[in-house]
Image (cartoon, rainbow, N blue to C red; front, side, top):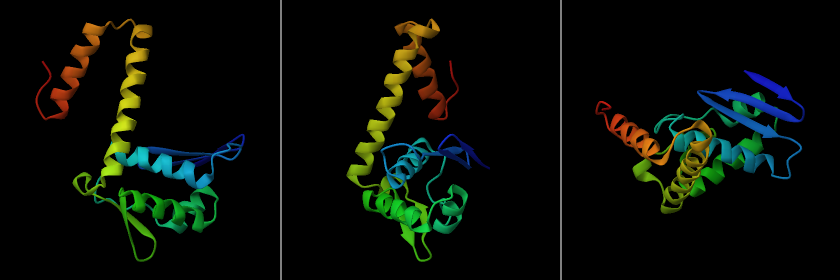
Length: 147
């Protein structure tokens, strides 16, 4: 599904929304890299899963295929994906990520945690309740049942 909103291009890919703001000073390549990294780090795109071909995603976004190819090469250089013949990029296993990719992933997760901590008082959640919620979520993610 593609949608244009006032100088923005929004494409839904798997469970991820890729948004390109045409009026942003950030290049389209950098915006695309950031959206795709978020999809990889959050698990919306699983390890081993191929990203759409450069031509397919370029057509969906309404950008030149070389823009997407550059984004894929950038992600490959950083260790998030492996680019194969035909400009298909496959998400690497997290154990195969470069040290820089792991650091960036941690930075992204930390930013999300900071946002959750900042939002919790506005939602009426105190520190003890937030710790309990985090503990239950960690247990659930490990495959255990929440207490």
